Structure formats: C-alpha cells, structure tokens
Image (cartoon, rainbow, N blue to C red; front, top):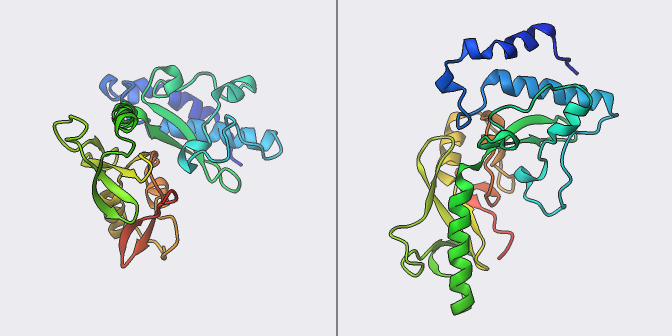
Length: 238
C-alpha cells in the first residue's frame, strides 16, 4: 500500500495556489489532489488495521453505492488526515465520500448529494398520494415493474428529474411497483458503454462502468444490466 508522502502533503497544502478560488468552492467536484489524499489515508488505515476499512456501519440491505460511507473520524484518530475535505458533507459540502470494492481494492469515490432534496420532495409527494389513493401515481410502464411518475396526479408542472453529475443532462426519476423512486441513469450508462472498454454481459451490474471511470458513483439507482447492447433495469422489487 502507498503512504502519504511529504510532497503530496505539500501539494494539498498549496492546492489553493494550484486551483482558483472558484474551483475550490464546496459545490465543486473534489479535485484529484483531494481524492488522492483521502485515498492514501485509506490505504494507510487498511495497512495499520489488518485489512479493516474506515467506514460507518450500515445495514446489509443498504444500496451498494451508499453502503460504505467513509468515516473521517477514524482517519483523524490515527493522524492519517488532518482535516475533512471542504467538499465533504461532514464539512458543509455537497459530497459524501464512499468506498467501492472495500474488500479487495478499497477505492475512494463520492456521492453527489445535490439530487437528494429533489428525490426527497418527490418521494414525499408520492407517499401523500398513496395515503389517499392506496396505489402510487403510476405513469407509463418502462420495463417490467418500472414506471414513469404521473406528475399530473401529484400536481407537478412536469415530469420530475435530476441533473446528471456526469453529463449534466436531465435524468428522469422513475418508480417501482411499491412507490420507491430512483434516478434513471440509462442515458449516461449507454454513453459510457460506447466510450469505455468493457466486457459486460447480461446479468452483470453495469453501473460500475460509471463508478470505475468517474469520481462520482451512480447512487439512488436500481441495478442495471446489458441487453442487446443497451442498459436494462434489474428490478429487485417487482
């Protein structure tokens, strides 16, 4: 495992000189220096703690990209990091730092939290609707057990969406049969499948093509696989 070198510490300390102030605001994607600093600290922690990773405890049914939230306090306790990055949620930023592949190759990524408020408001509207009408506000069935949301039944002006952290396109919010909602990443996944080399086959979870090639993970999503060269939902709740 790598260790934090003196040069990396100096680079991080001087990052204010390397990046303009408007690039270091808390609503920006963490820069490579920040991510590498945290990555190095995580690797040192794993070395010092017999393979354990510095994460918060979550239940086993937590969605995979939200399951391994980084616990900065554990890194600080062992003096592996001096402060929490300004982009981190714990420090008022818009990103939660997480690990993917925690068992064999713990890798630091982030969740973009700017979509959570929109998801929360839409889920609340659906829950209120269900309390009055029993069934969720089903729109068109996209695939087996996956639906668009009938925004008119909820009194919304248009179909709900969030802005993609990858392409900045508008990504639809979709719903399963019990009214749980998810971000639909099919557009971004399709683009990634065309852009990056891969050997995904039907049955594989292709969301990792985004997680592996970007600093941001596709949180709040259903699993997807590949069918006929295109992304397809894997609905676990149908």
